[in-house]
Length: 473
Ligand SMILES: Cc1cc2nc3c(=O)[nH]c(=O)nc-3n(C[C@H](O)[C@H](O)[C@H](O)COP(=O)(O)OP(=O)(O)OC[C@H]3O[C@@H](n4cnc5c(N)ncnc54)[C@H](O)[C@@H]3O)c2cc1C
Image (cartoon, rainbow, N blue to C red; front, side, top):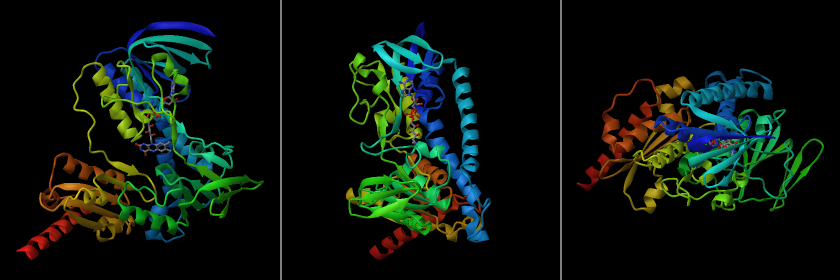
């Protein structure tokens, strides 16, 4: 293996996912010299190669090819393609990944960020060593500041025989060789439910097994009930409060045994049992840092580790572990390192779940407001009452606003159905500007749109608040 020593950089970033990319670009924009280290074929990180982008592209391909969203209009048997193959689905994914990788590479190069391929590990507090097995090179990089954005990988449960074919983790779904007729999804978290709904839409009989008694508890319960209803309608079976005790692999499939004694036959089992921080290879002990048992690194509100010039951002620091938040953490870490002022991470962050149908919300839930004794009123708009809902063939979607009964400030927006992850930003903007529901009542929206749901829900809230005032007087 040949070895090189490169010049000292103002910032060395480990990992090129959303957190690392944005840290590198923010520092470069401040005129700093920046190096970013990434493993072969992983430019863009988990986000681009195995996580967000492939799963969201897969979802688009599923929606298009199954004709799912058009069935209310053209009938239950409507399909764009009768026999959908993994090639049909993954061709689109590969194309999008390829293009996005080029976008990331070009952004980094345009900003004069140097890309070092290989795996980085610390040698001392200001030095990392990069092993590039492909080229047989060992490079030593020195830096004043470091940002660790090494992300996560699927957590593998001990005793589970992941073979990449019958028993898969969520990354391995992207290399499925056929669309299974039946599937068990273990874990009803966001990733598990997103994939469960995609395969259910493809016609796979899906059983979701979850230890807890419910799923996606952080969302509005009414919205999640609507999602569960919809998924059941797509032949998804839920087994809540159940634990997997064993899986037998046979010639043509698997049998999953639950602690309750139930046995579930399925062609494939997908484990979506959380994620593990990728910290083992970093040699954190060389700089006096350590990760917890889930591989996560602890940071303060500036994303600084206990070693002041080493920052950590993105999934490797844990919750909320989203591409959207990781990007901003990266930018803020770079700003903090180089003394650029910033107002910090905004508290108002939207959540998007790309299930079929999709779910999104911003702000408080009814449960949180009730717990905090905040008086609120609810306004609901159903897509079936919107002209756009009829045109698009979405009769099940809904938007729900939570409004403070006294100040009339918007406290939360919860959406289920078409465009939910886009629409949520209207609520976010109103809330971010401390707006009241009056704005939504008075605003004129394009017609016919899903955005109109805000006005309808706002009028609904206002009517309720008005009747409260009438009955009081
Ligand atoms: C299936 C799935 C769907 C998702 N969907 C969404 C979604 O819809 N919306 C959303 O906001 N988020 C979503 N996420 C989460 C999102 O992908 C992550 O939050 C995001 O990718 C985290 O970014 P990151 O900067 O921490 O780095 P990551 O994207 O995790 O990338 C880290 C990179 O660091 C590299 N690395 C690790 N160690 C080293 C080392 N020692 N040397 C060199 N390089 C190293 C890795 O190779 C990897 O490329 C999804 C995740 C998954 C798995």
